Amino acid sequence: MAKKPARTSPSSKPAAKKAAPKKKADSPAAPSRADDLKAYREMLLIRRFEEKAGQMYGMGLIGGFCHLYIGQEAVIVGVMGAAKPGDQIITGYRDHGHMLACGMDPKGVMAELTGRSGGYSRGKGGSMHMFSVEKAFYGGHGIVGAQVPLGTGLAFANKYRGNDNVSLTFFGDGAANQGQVYESFNMAELWTLPVVYVIENNQYAMGTSIARASAQTNLSKRGVSFNIPGEQVDGMDVHAVQTAADKAITWCRAGKGPYILEMMTYRYRGHSMSDPAKYRAKEEVNKMRAEHDPIEQVRHRLLEGGTSEDELKEIDKEIRAVVAEAAEFAQASPEPDPKELWTDVLSPVAVAGA
Ligand SMILES: Cc1ncc(C[n+]2csc(CCOP(=O)(O)OP(=O)(O)O)c2C)c(N)n1
Ligand SMILES: [Mg+2]
View 1 (cartoon, rainbow, N blue to C red):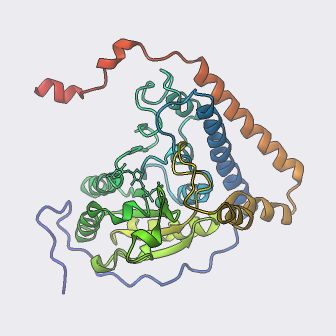
View 2 (cartoon, rainbow, N blue to C red):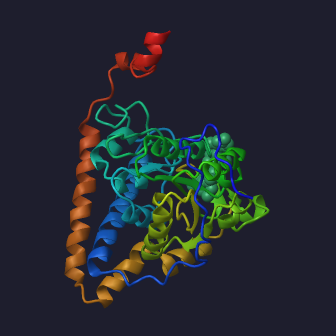
View 3 (cartoon, rainbow, N blue to C red):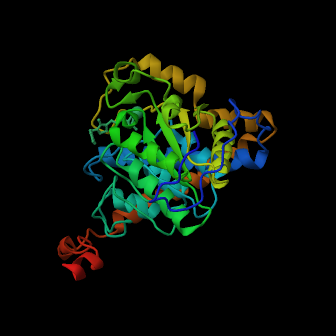
């Protein structure tokens, strides 16, 4: 049955009839050396930054929650490789990698983690609450799944304004069981909104494995009853991620509505810094690291292609220097003034209208 345009749709144009997307990603051309070097650098920055954050947490320099993304770097780096400036990014609390891949300054992110005034939220937000309108990064959300309707709203705004930006909305396998996700899917398809739902399936929601929590573990199928196409992608392979993201973003930009990408990935660390991860065997983690590490895969390809060890060592050195500078900046930045407790609580519009 032809779909009627909703009265509240941002566009009065009825959705164009879709051609069914091809089942599999078109066989991707091999990545160029330049692509691999870029991905290597970006993933390594996230890895080293997070290792440093973990260390600083252990030293008591970071308080509150801190959810590390180590192991999942290929997902955000691959997706960003397919995005253009103006596309919005929104995610949950496992968010430092997304910020760095959006181009946010490592110094500002680390200062926020340590609760200092030089941080993106002036030291008042911490790990889960950072934003950058300039880089189109919309958080950083601690309520599981809350970013999904918000990301759908960003897509609604794009369509309403008639621009060609796409909302890149990231959430986890646990969040995929939230009711608000399906309300969002329904509206996104009904109104043909430009949103790629990127499900980061790292196989666990805190200590619960996907098999124990989900009746349908193939999350790429979760849009079937809404007619949203979906694909499973090797989320440990940055090139596979970028190829799939490119296809999904092109779909959205062409006005065909939402797309679901299920990224099969893995987190090496516990759910947060306070999780000893007793619910899984060490061998499971070690096997994933040894056989699928996203950075090692690219490193291996670069070396095979003739890049020298020395060139890669030089990149490692540069990245370590950026991270060390971020850590020094954070520790030198003062704590927020106590009177800042009363600022940034209400928006000026809300205050004026009160
Ligand atoms: C609405 C809500 N319910 C429960 C929690 C507690 N909680 C925090 S993270 C989490 C697991 C989410 O797992 P997943 O979506 O797979 O993301 P991951 O941590 O693996 O990145 C839960 C249940 C919460 N923050 N919000
Ligand atoms: Mg998960």
